[in-house]
Image (cartoon, rainbow, N blue to C red; front, side, top):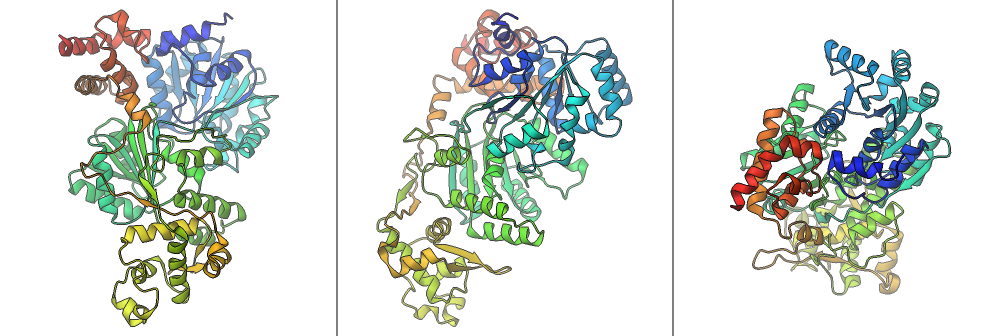
Length: 607
């Protein structure tokens, strides 16, 4: 096979003239027929690693995907690019299934998307026997972390995929995922019985994402500030309870920001309707529990907000990673409080799941939430990446939105002393009220207004005090105890600092800087670069053209073109078909099929 065949395919069908990191190596493994485990971050071009080789190798590529909506979007995109692909699942009518089966027998398709149940569930044996007669060249298993009990999204049906080697003895197996620690990768290799697999692990860092953490204060005010930064842009707001999802979706809609809820308590019909409305850009905001998961392939999500911390850094990385899948700038905001972690502990204990492993994962998430160092560095090193930069240019710490607190040891000892003087029997809200000198009924009736710690932080806002408490908890100086009414208590390290100011010589505390007087903000490096030389008026006009075409064809707009391609058009302003092919993300089929409509808009704007 010519060495440049993959490059030709990549440019002809997808409009890309270069490979992203590790894409070429991953494709070479597929073309060579070697088993592989590939870990690439969301937005890193993972799907292309098995889609492009399917056009280079002879035979049929079978893609195992966990969600029907994800299969449909990928197949729609492939067909739009001129790639013969199909899906086979329970959503198809009997007639549609017959058409796909006939096409398979005639060798019309290069890729077939199926669910794991279709291959290894009831009736899977006969289906696989039929597929084996269609010349299966390789099997790609997407979201492969689902096969591992150590993964964050373990699915028992994926475990049965261990039989694929017997079902397709001549085919190579390729496992793809965006999130897998070394332990999960080993488990994937064992469970799938991979033979001497090529293991490729890309960097977990996504420099286009801006990470921020805020202590929970006046939540609605905090959410409005996010929406002001992202007018008319797509966003997901994650909550930990269905009740909060419904309440926030209603409140946002009533306040001029139409939002739809998504959680397991809704009917299947309503969930699907709300998800489709978001994917088809009929609504820009979804408020959801983590049930709003892997099927979300909308590429232009410009912000993801977590109202409450998830149970692990893996979960946070996966959920926040739904932002900026097109490689353009996006914001990931965590609004957290110590109560989040207490709620998780209680729930896990109640369900018998509070093991040493889950406890460790929760503590690591708490350290991220209360940390005051570079967020990108924290996440990268958590997943085993080496971090060589001094400034990421894309988090609240490195963008200078936080500032170090003078005399952090003194501030910490004031808080620790207050916790001790109220007998370690009260929660963060009460401690905050005492320290700020608030003569509330709860404070006065308990005699806490007479304590020496009353008013020690009287000039400090509630959010700032709560932020310090979160940081001290993350640093292991405070812990929450109790069940229905969690209270703060000192840890051995906290007691040591209270007794000896020199016990924590490297202690650092941080606080939010006040907003600039002119209302401007520092733009991330990715944001500044992605908008450079882009005609924003033309970009908006091209989005309207894309939306009109998508409505006519009944597909989500990102299936037509990603925002990255539209921004490049609005930057280069091609006016001929030949020039349009130089835009990244515009392949020959789409240029022929859709080009004139976009060129007409560019010409009308330019001349």
